[in-house]
Image (cartoon, rainbow, N blue to C red; front, side, top):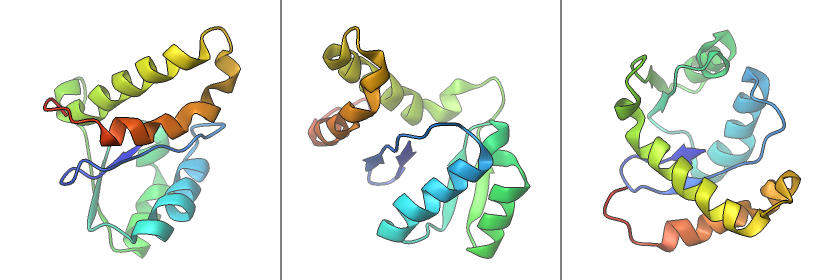
Length: 119
């Protein structure tokens, strides 16, 4: 999940594993290639987004990188709120077919179009 903190624009990408390689490739191929490189990114504490690969990618593309404060989910409130909204929305459609969740990521468009003062 990628969120522009200023415009609140949301993008979601299905990935098979949460490794640094998959995360970096997804950012480059699906986000940076469409929107350009950001000035800065803010990530959670996961090892996959805080290792050498992502650090080197940020250095190469001249992207400042920060991360959330440990044990303070409020520092990542926007992402956590979108996660809950997307999970709830997708759950309404997949019911018992949970292996097909990635087919419903297009519902992110509906989430983007919905006015929500809390996000």
